Length: 117
Image 1: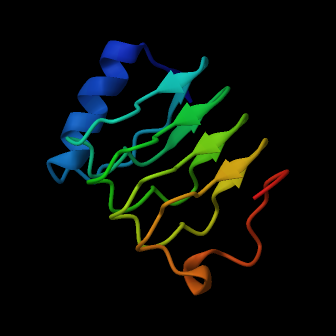
Image 2: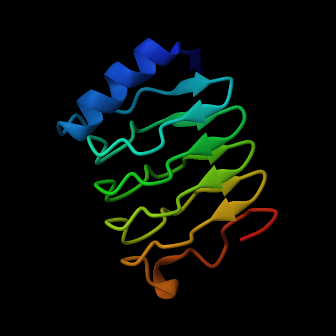
Image 3: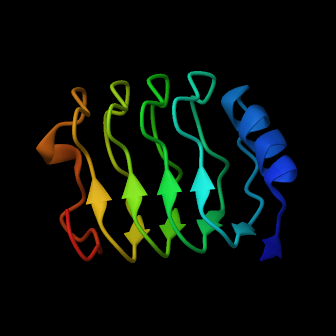
């Protein structure tokens, strides 16, 4: 898995939001703060984050990639377009879903691994 910079990750996010579905394993080692980015509809396939991932207020985000791994906390508060959580989602810390109005409980994988939801 390749370590990426914030600039490289931003480019991969733009490509994924434009419809690029290629799987490129990539790792971002720090806290990834993408709060209130209305331009994000998708995250790149193969993404792992070494600390916290904050997507609070990303109102256009429709789904997360299968196999997304977040070593710390995953903040999804206010992600109103998010309809389900993917199989294989791994969260090492807490998972915050406040205000995810399109997310139905039945669309949260039963085997989701997280310290707290």
